[in-house]
Image (cartoon, rainbow, N blue to C red; front, side):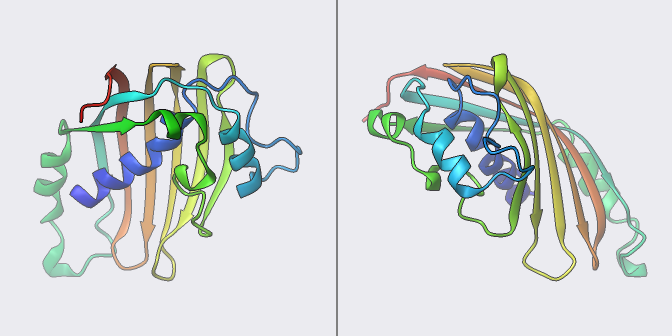
Length: 188
């Protein structure tokens, strides 16, 4: 479960990086695909507030299909799933002035991951609208993430829906809320 929350946090990082961007989306050539170069170009134009940011992720709902689990494991996931709902993971990150002035493509979650495709990534008019698809490390694993919400230069709020498929473990859908805000200058 902690790995899942970390994955959610990593996928939310682009929103922090794009917090003050006002473009109409990363697909600048209109080919329907968002390349690393397009992500990097959009990142290069970002102007957001450096400082310490607090990020909160709350698991709102979890649905798990047990049909592909071995018989001895069926029925065991219900308690685990119930424990996940309502959990809030809070973390703090320091975004330095240097990072704020020159974020590179490596600053973007998934930008260096050849297994992720950004189908949609728009931050127009203070609104967040993203659709990301990633292949897992094992054959047949797939994760689809949809994010919607709003943002300013010092905060964002969004809802995320993640649908993960695994041939050995079945399908899991997780709905979560993610919010972040600048809480001051970096400490230390």
